[in-house]
Image 1 (cartoon, rainbow, N blue to C red):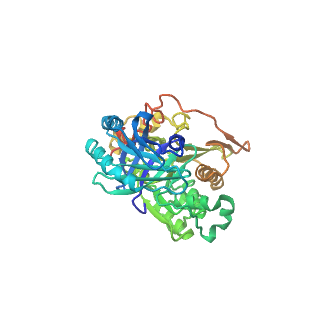
Image 2 (cartoon, one colour):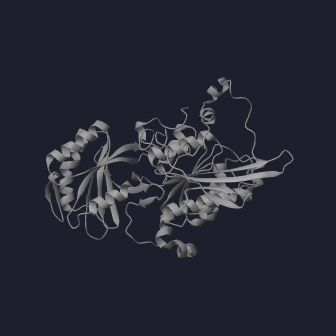
Image 3 (tube, one colour):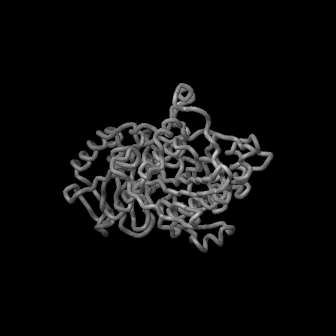
Length: 453
């Protein structure tokens, strides 16, 4: 992506609980500790996946006023023992219970000169940091193991995605070309769209339409992933592709389309397969992703990325059933958000475990596998149907990120019935992807999703 962005990621509703706890005793300052699993992203930034919040009681404070806090040594030692056992990053979180955008005070800096070196000695090799909460705003920074301070984004990932971008000052300037959208979303909503780093995986019939809509909406940063090239059979449904593009990588065609809409956009094309673990890891530098793939293996990898590393996304697909005579009998679209608090693709029964196994085999393993016979059969695809499903997916993202009214986070479109149905469901206890006993919030302490090549 464009620059080095550190991120502290919370699963919903933990960040809001932290804010409420720290501001509950206003005007007194309040403190607690946040524990996170440290993940190094492909851009060499850190993504801190929060898994616990350690609240403090009255006896943990040696001093507590409206402008300063001092803890007793036993409270700090207790947190250090827990963090050391987990190999966890520690973030010292406290309130500035007055209006305005918070920043570390001289008293904060003085306390950190003792506190942060202690954590770095006892839990070395991982970053530690601070979070300061004031009414309506959050400041965060991390200190890398070499002691360098970096500003950090803070986000809460769930049915709603709340992003506090480092350095935001509350001003919301917008390009005049988006005036009509600002009338709908407000200047803050438009700014959030521009700030989101969005990955689109799979650039075929649905993915190309998602990219086109995002570019028109004002999304500024894109990560585009697809291993394939344009074929003549793609030209009826891949927007932005022309006859002269046959043989070109889909990621290059998609990049050109984005830049034709917004020449200032930052686009990172990657001609690669997201089923490969190294490629899947690129999503750790994104704020949101769209899964527009057509294999069970790729969907399984993306679902695990979402819950293991707290990267929200939307999975979408289209199924057209037709008789041998070309008579369409069923047309179904599915749009499902992937985030904590929502059922994953395993819980929803979307994934076929045998198909996932086959998709994640290496070529050598596939050649040896006696159960894999023949090639995939091409499925029907129609651009107007893809467009309807893509539009629902992008609108669902707008709902999650900027509050456009759409209550559902899993929808099924039945075109032959003329209906859009909200799909109800709950995460399954013990699910290997989205439950606490599975990959959820595990970061790099859990097996990385995808095949090793």
